[in-house]
Length: 330
Ligand SMILES: [Zn+2]
Ligand SMILES: [Zn+2]
Image (tube, rainbow, N blue to C red):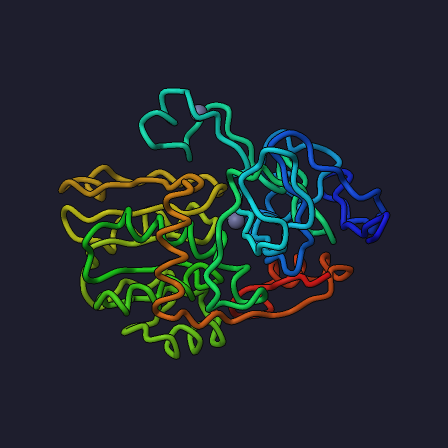
């Protein structure tokens, strides 16, 4: 067994990640140690690195779409050493606040998040609370399972929040949209994909996954939508999406961070249109979505990077240089 591990560490927001050798962490009460086999790169990691989310733990090891194998466990944990697990964004919830008691652990007042307040998966090993690890279906290999742990399952929570919408708009065609398009198509919905004006690779990618219509995000759809999900962190898209949905339609904001939403006339909201946000995930979302992903099965497009190239993966995400999801492999 290694006595030390490599990790990519953020010392301060808006500085490049630094490669460090660290002592192998020992599991504390209730924790497991996981040997990381893959960790996908999420836009939220960019928000942490860019200082757009308040008060991260510093220094922090980012990464919250982690697949690995349990290699050590604290006494009394109900997991098996050798089991393959997924570690998502929700790293801890208290279990007794009013939100947790209502089944809304995603809104827990004491919640703590992987790769933000808890060291995450841009490393060879990580620690996790055993109760918040998710079992992964055997159908998916490590590389392709990793993006499901946030892009997939928070995307799925957005899709559920969109309700029974038949005509569904997706703004921002990255890792989440490429997975959710497939789920939506499987559910007999029509997908209207909105991409950055001029982003032809994203448009072609959306078409290849079954979008019925693809257009620029500053264009109206050919018909009013029943609902729209915004995955891009761009506030201007909120009023645009609101204009694209019919009376009674819903706009779901799926990101953790968004630039300010510009002012718009009340008439655009009138007609019982709604704007809602989706925050985090519950373990129930995780179990439901991972089962569905195994059944479909989902086609997951991945771009593999060595762990030591984590900074390039973040830079490529920021610049929109790939379609699908980037995945780091130690
Ligand atoms: Zn709670
Ligand atoms: Zn994420």
